[in-house]
Image (cartoon, rainbow, N blue to C red; front, side, top):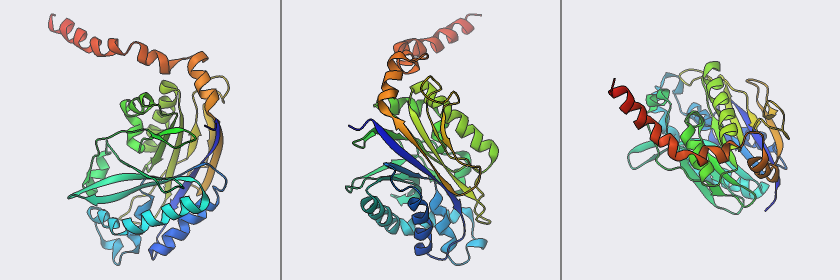
Length: 296
């Protein structure tokens, strides 16, 4: 297994398009900027750009956003072909999918050999209720050959148990496609993403949707980054690479998995080991507190 690999996060600026072909060309422009990377990310729900291809979209309601599922076969064909042609693993952000009477926010991870991994967002942000998005119920780390990775879509990065579960399954890299509507929302995800790196001693790629596509679609505020634990061997901030805020661009970094595993053994803060070493106590403390408070 290779120990050093390149990650690229494509910060995608949403804009009106007239067709799926125009959307595909926009995506390819970003992928061209990520040439040579082993692993490429696009943002959460960047496919809402496709909503602007429907006649009368400016007068439509966000409740109709699930209509972009009409493009799901083309979306999957596009990124399967790009992963194969470019010989890259591509996390094609996430996309709204209608199945079994439910609409879920599904991340699609394409391998060049043809394998497709799907992850339905398990914790939806309250604003997502506007398009009646349902929640998934599975968290699974996947083996990509060069690394083991897990997906945490935007708000999932704010839920510590999501990252912890993926790290317990062997994830070395967390992939966080994101779409935050305000600067406050961005920093919630970003600060939590950095915390997940420290808590679990993992790398994390945070890839943002930005831009002002026009009402009724929301604006995006973001600054993509590739993060590491805050420890010796990496920048003190834990930031390996960072985009400019709200500008379409590709940011990339080299990561060393061997260094990561060594850090779990000998780092100044061996949180991956110590959080699990005393896990039984975390489950016991709440019941102890409840009994103590009840006896007052």
